[in-house]
Structure formats: C-alpha cells, structure tokens
Image (cartoon, rainbow, N blue to C red; front, side):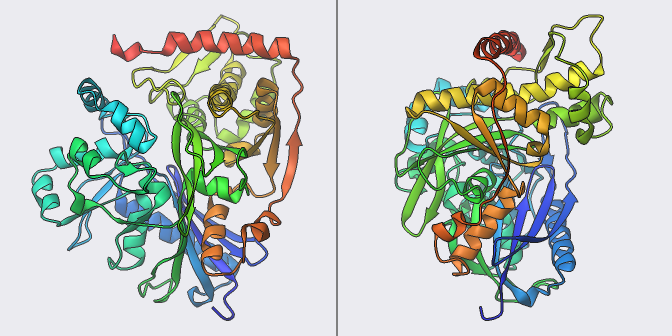
Length: 499
C-alpha cells in the first residue's frame, strides 16, 4: 500500500449514487454524484434497474477521482455502503439481472407477510433475526421474484442464480463476477440471518422458501473481502476492504463506538440507530441489527426505520408541484410561525417503526381556508422530526438508556429548521457533523481500517468534527402538546388501506 493514502467510498443510495475520496486525515478531498431513476410500475411498488445502479456508481466514482486528481492506481482501498434491503437476483453465468431490483420501500409482499404471520412463524423469525415480519426486508422480496419470474425457482435451486443486496451486486461487478459476498450488516436485513450466530439459518430459509445456493458468503464489515478486476477506471487488485449497510455505515462514520451513542440519518427515509455494544436488545417496535462486525467481534444496534422523510419533500416537489426544490423548504417553513394546525403524516409507503403498519396511508389533517403552501411545507419538515421522536421514545424505553444527545447526518441534516425542531420536539441536544456524508465516510473508515490506513477506532474518533449544536428551545408543555396532536394524526392514518 506504499504511496496509497486515499480511500474511495461508494455510497449507493435510493435516490442516487455518491462517491467520496477521503485522505489519510479523514478529510473529504472530492465528491461525485449521479441521480438514480426510480420506477413505479404499480401503486406501492418501487423498483430500480440494477444496471443503472452500477452505471450511476461508476459515474459518481469517476467524478470523485477526477475532481481529486487521482488515478485508480493511487487508491488504497474501496469501501461500499448501500441502500440495504433492496433485492437483486442475477444469472451467475451472464451476470445479467433477471428482474429489476425490488426496492426496500416496495410493499408488494405485504399480503405474503400476512400469510406467514397467520402461519404462526413470526415469533420464530423475530427471535432469530431481531426483525419484524414486514415487506420492508429482503426475504419476502426474494421469494416474490422466485415465484413470479418464469423458471427462477428451478434455476435458483440448481445454483444458477445469485441473490444480493446492493453491496453484493457492486462487489460482483467490481470483481468481474469472481466474488459473491455480502457483509454481516446487510445480511442481518434479509430475514434469513441468525443474529446471534451471524450465519444463514436453514429453518428461516425453509420458511421463506429461499434456496441456500442463492446466498452470498458473509464477510466482516472491515477487512479485505475481495480485490477489483481490471476496470477502465480502477486497476486490478485494489482491495475492497469495507462494507456496511447505509445506516450502520453512518453510525460508524459518526464515531458512535460506545454503547448508548445514537445517530439519526435524514435521507429518503429516516433512520435512528443506537449502539448497544455486544448486547442484543429485543424490542416490540424496533429492530435489532448488526451494527458492524470487526474480525470475530459483533457490535449490535437497536434501529428505528422511518420509511418516508426526505421523500415527503420529493412528493411535494414532484407530485404536487408546490416546491421547486427540497432546498427551498427551509425558508418556506420559517416564513410562517407555525403550521396553522396542519399535521402531515407521510405514510406514503405505510408506517415503519414503531408502528409497522403496512396499511397506513398518507394523511393531512387540520386544513382550513387559511392553509397555504408554507404551512404544508412546514408540516412536512415537522413530520420528519415527529416520526423521529416516535422512534427515539421507543428506543429509550426498550433499551433502558437515557437519551441526551443525538448526532444527525444525511442531506436533510443541513436544514437548520429541521435540526432545531428536532431538538425542540425531543428535548435532546442535536449535534451536526462537519461532514454530512457520514454514510460514505463510514464506508471509507471501515475500508481504511481494513487495510491499516488507520490503526484503531480511537484514531477514527479523533477525526469526527461537530460543525454545529442545536439546543432545545421549546418548553416541555408546548412540546408535549404538539406531540399529542401528532399522535392523534397518526391514528387517523393507520390501517387506512385495510378498509
């Protein structure tokens, strides 16, 4: 690795692909980005083209390397982080996907989840995996593809097909199809991993009707998993040395290395994770997951997933046309003193934690003739913070740990109004880092750690810099009054599509 002092981090997300070049001081030298098209073939269905996932990743990486003035031969390691439960099946021989990727937001397997629940398997699934039985996770998406793509099940049983979440797809493409591997964090989102053993579970595979030959090998989150093939933008032999699902990578990038540390990422969805150390915390409304696995040591996390956060602003922009861009939401929200009594529950893909209601639907209540565009925009931003409080309250109750500070990241964390309202409505101190791309930064840290660019977690902790702190400014009575009204609005959204 002599002379190689930079890490290339590939962050493949729901809305687009980002690449960072990070130097040995943990500084972001350059960034690249390419938007990823979304496909909505039916209501509640969300798909991506796997080849577009790869193409946008390559485009972002080329941009970042070009802006950094680096050639691929100067890269010490590649780190990967990704939208997690999104499911891809491809042909091992040709490398061609057999269907579009089914995105984590997709709800097409809600009825299958209901049938499995009626079969009485949910307690076993929850005990083994730490997850709830929900269409969010990969397992039922794999089964849907096997059941609906002609010939797929027979080919899978013969070992002709490969399953992967997006990280495994990128590893496959980066290595020219030589390596089929995922890491423990992504494997923990499939409904097929025994969380305590960190191994695929034969009984879970039987329940899901997923053939074992489909599955990738499970690797640690940090350490050399594979080496790149000879690509025209990277040479052969660059180590792929860090992999983690996006939310776990953000937790790592925020230097939340002690039990009790919490981060919240504001992106398409909104995801709060609490490091629980080596303790696997069970929760009725949240999920237990692998935070990362370093060598043979597993760190766990408690997670609350909000399906629609920044996507609510995208809907106001693209669906209703009342925003030119998400960036103007801050000024619009601040232009009115409050929402005028309007509450927006953005259950556009059901409700995630702690409700887990696949049949909830988006609801706006409190409209009057005086409601204007800024009120709706402010209600959408406040909804992101309200949903996060739902999760954080459950996290405190189920972990038995008192919450005092919340580290925030993602593009939404750049919105001062949102950060301040998050502090106000939770009563927590909100800390915003200097680098908001902490998901990609976490992938860079894992990869650099994996090749010895950084010697320890302490060395990484020293590189975490807080740019701004937001203190609560709302008195307790006003906070609880607003939150009680939010909970009333949530009750009106729940179960709507169930009839």
